[in-house]
Amino acid sequence: MTRSERRRPRSALARALAALAAGASLLAAGPAAGDDTGTIVGRVFDATTRVPLPLANVLLNTVPVRWWTAADGEGHFVLKDVSGGAWEITATAPGYQTVVGSVPVGAGETTGVSFSLSPGSDTLRVRQRQVGPRAPLVVSFPRVTELQGEGLIGSWYSVEFPRALGFSGDGRRLALGTRSGLTAYRARGGQLLVDREWRFPAVGPLDLAVVAGPEGVVRLQVAADSLALVTEAVADFADWPVERLAGAGVYPHLRVAFSDDRRRLAAWGTAARRPVVWQVADGRRLATLATELEVRCAAFTPDAGGLLLGGEGAGRVVELWDLAVGRRRGSLRADSAGAATRSLAVDPRGRYFVTGGADLALTCWSLDDLARRWRLAPTGCCAGEFLALSPDGEVLVTGSGSGLLFVDTGTGAVIRKLKTNHERGIRDAVFAPDGETLATIGYDSRLALWSLERLFSRRQ
Image (cartoon, rainbow, N blue to C red):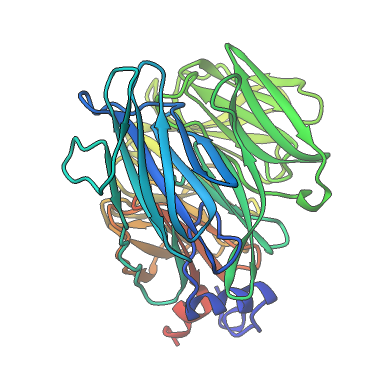
């Protein structure tokens, strides 16, 4: 990032997001419709085994309004835009007793509710707030520690664990992906407002990813051993750079990657013994790569003509495949490249790629001849778990403990360390298209936005 770039006028998005520092409290799962409403979040589980009860029904019943929702696969649920006041709330699940209690909802507040259901067919009415690990209804008001760190624009707590995030091509929208859906936000009046939501069905075909295709929004589904691409024509999302990846333990354990133009899709994982590349527009299979790697990550070259595979196997840790002929163009061997590769990032201009190794080291390689350009020794417990490149390819970001590490891609020198109080570390990061804003999600279910102008102005 050059000095002239650091002094550029801030974009409209950056100026709008800067207002977030002034204060509005907002859950990333969705904002309230107004200042007079609140949110109820919670979980339903078995009173004896403490196992979550997926698809349990949760109902708010205060005449004349009724809210109903179903818990997800981990027993979590959320009810948004609930008017302030005392609400009767009911939880039911097949084979379990029905629990009815009262929940106070404060305007602009979030109330946490836990249901502990016992086997039976009767109805248990809880007249007072209960306490204890096996109480049928426990009401609490979660207090989340405010995120801290230099350059922070704003942060929000997500009711569901965030799995993926990204900006739209024009930088005006930010999306957060969770197990149950994808939500797109836009900045307005110091808040992140919900622009559009996709909710994934709890039963039926598994939605594996939502990204943009040439005809609009593409939803990738998997049923049994087949993949289906479903297109939703939404012109405003023509270049949407967000994908939702299946988490560990979700059949068929597939991971996916899309080319920069969103016209090609690669999938790999334990259910796909060999990575497969498709053409998004018509679903035509372009290549099946006969690699011996246990693939952990993959990334297309900028022209979408090549695919980098990272992992470990047959003495190799990285392979570069030519998709036109379906053959391996080159590889990095473990004896020269080091530990298994767990993350990859490719320069948008096609000059190099960076690998994050299982030994927590970062290495930069020339994309033309796979020669090593530089290597950065381990710098933190999360280094290399994720990699994010600035739009100009000049700055690399990775995790460093609970903070971030900024690296000059030309020299491999550390140019900035950012300390935050993201508990248990940062899961992923992505740059806005203008390179002025960075978004992060942490294992503490926090979404945060950072100003690159503020961070790098201190270097002068």
